[in-house]
Image 1 (cartoon, rainbow, N blue to C red):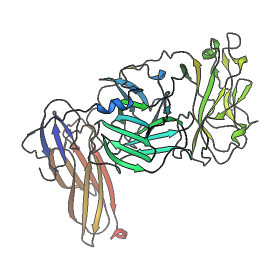
Image 2: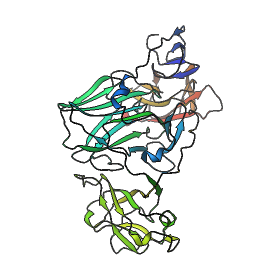
Image 3: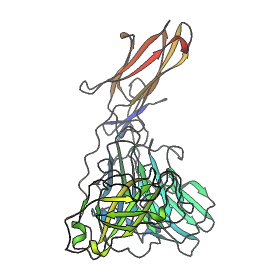
Image 4: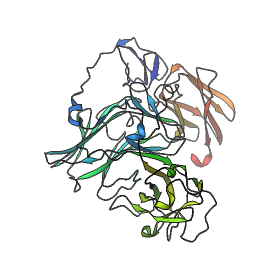
Length: 470
């Protein structure tokens, strides 16, 4: 159908012409008024797994649900929730909207001496509509680097601005970063989508996989596989225990600390322990004087990367060995306070902190929640043309970022609380509509979206039309 606003596939509505599923489905195009086309039988496309041979040395299909044994996941607790999905996928739910999750494989990339120096592969739906996939290759062992990576890092960002075609919401694609002696290539499903002459000066690096949720809306990202060619020998096994500082502000050396501590239980049977933290750099501060205070004991924390940026928005991971006197069975049950301190700390903040102790992590992923329920398209409305006697109202319904769409019945227009127009579109998905309104003087205009399901909440947009806008 010419000018399709969406599609009906596998019994559900989607805005994108690309959808993931198995079998040969009947597909119907849906226009901006909800009208359906005749069905067309979809063709099957054979899969190609030949890419796996290039990363056979370190390829994770997430069949093992002990995620922490192989990765560190950085994100706001409660807003970044990992789970085990069907088919052995890692599912990251981000119900708060606007959050970023960063996955750090414990296995590091080690370049070899052949023409292809190294390769990183991620199979994910993160770069779908309104989505973002960030791959950082950083010397050292950071958990995250924020918006400004270190000078010697390599950053690859894939979003809506980089695409050889349409990426559907919830559809997996394979993204590869290939490092060679002549430069770097970025591939999607085997086709090159970007290149750069940059050649890394380092030989070893940590791979950071960042995925983001659409601002203001709950997000869900799936990662099906991660491959790293030429990895270093397996790092020591560690168990993580998150610990929360008494204040998320980095304190001055002699500033009074809140009387909030942490349990000493993770340290009781540990032969050694390491504290790792990521801070957002404030306006100034002497990182050479950064220390952690656990109870009455203070010990230094040092950056785990070189060439890091000291600009106010940058993020830096630091680490330090916990002193021996805090280990073992003797001692109090709690360590109070727990804070970070730094001369000239200004507005530096603690984004994350946790303890690492030797041993296999017992933490196992829970089963991920079911696929999110269909959502209504996002409605926007604006006046695009205003004359002394008329105004053109444009209403846009956008469902591109939805994994599946709840059908709408149409929308209504109200002028100064009085009903003036209804545009029916039973079973509609999305589209752009223009209405010409005869208006004089100043008015309040409301557009109300009506879902087909009367139990769903009605959405609305308020507009003001004043003489100053004429």
